[in-house]
Length: 244
Image 1 (tube, helix red, strand yellow):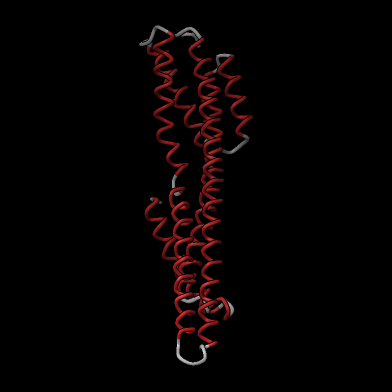
Image 2: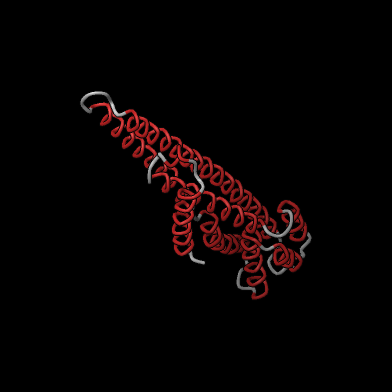
């Protein structure tokens, strides 16, 4: 499913569910926050959906088994000259890391079998180029929707602030009326301000935490891929071209 389609579905579903929650499940004191509460609920639901989606994607990117065990097995196979075994391990593991390493191993086998590259420098450049091209395809898939998480954090805070301002306007309007202030309207205004403030903080804090968590996790994952790829490239180029 394309990212734009997924995001559209999540957006529509979040507002629909948010409206249902607002109308039928929330206590009255939360409803007093006004219609903007629906938007805050929808933003929170969208954030939860994106967290689940990114978690699934990252687990899939790591492959079927332990990533550290896989990298160790591939390095041992390459070190002993069993390139076919290393490729088979990549096929078994799957995931972004395995796909990137496999691209380098495939290129190595191709240039060795065709005998088109003679020097170690040429070998390293070709293998490294293949790995970089594979990384350019895989890494963006890991970083999808991170910007949306950051946007939700910003929008949630702003929507909460908007609700706070509207609530305070209602409160001051109740206080400014001639005679005794309208206690009911004053209470409604204060309630609207505080409920929206709390909802905006929940969405904002949740978005920031989720964005930083996944950004750090992806950075660590890509660093591990780069480190493993570099190690395997060095093993490959240290072997004589044409040596199986």
